[in-house]
Length: 373
Image 1 (cartoon, rainbow, N blue to C red):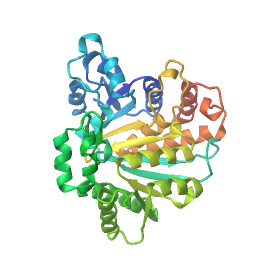
Image 2 (cartoon, rainbow, N blue to C red):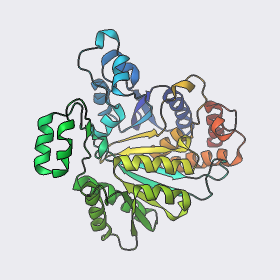
Image 3 (cartoon, rainbow, N blue to C red):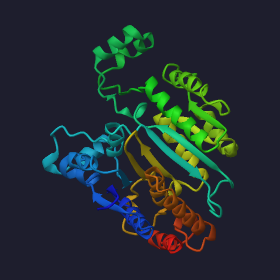
Image 4 (tube, one colour):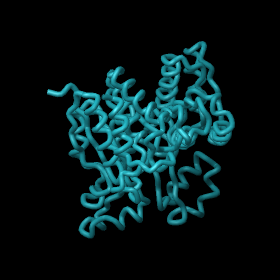
């Protein structure tokens, strides 16, 4: 019997290809895992009206963690148009399966390391090493949205919030609404995770990124909670920045920042920017981590135009597997994998198109495997 059961979720498009690459490196490491396939993605939305079938969630309950490739997501009208004819008009509503996974399994922390490896021609500057902690289950991405907005809802809101009165004549079909929901528990959890990481890894500062001067209540709760948590970690500075200014400062002075922490949407934005500083989404790994379970994935999409070409950079997926190994406690394997990836990048003999080369994802993976062996 294998030591670990891994939920294997390739998803759509190039997700299948980068997962194939990942299996090659895990086999080369002699990782003792049983890989259990799970149905997830666009094809299941079209056929079943559910991109994350219940059978997949049930299967995952009997695994240690999951590796996930990539998914296709489209706006509501386009998603409905792609349902098979027999599925249309039955009330199915598309919701991102990875967002649903995060919420249903309480994968509250998105851990996104953005590290510039020596020799990468895409590095913005040498020596960048930023880790983003993104709250994963709250904020604007909770999916509490309305269209049309019922007029009586706006009347109720106006009773409690005078600023809502100006929209009383614009409700129903002419208005859409998304709710940014932030809880003290969610704020404390993600900020504490960031400080614990800084403490464990010898980092001297944690920067909380929000917009409390405009989003006074939700952003204010985040910042107030961060200040309270920071008092428990003497020797680690808390910096506070607005999301727009932080984007500018990351480009200007990326070496100033060690650990960034933000709510869901702002964390999404700032992690993509941080990833671009070290080469783009082809190098951006991610872990969706809860108290007892985790799903590891690259942050890039399914890139359907490249599917079947083995063209995309597999590094983000391979580094996601490295994060999985760390989380499982297989530290030696994790280090060995990262060292092999770093060596391939530094030598530059094998590079995918984004790095200015012409090699396939499989060829780059084979070069990593060569050093693993």
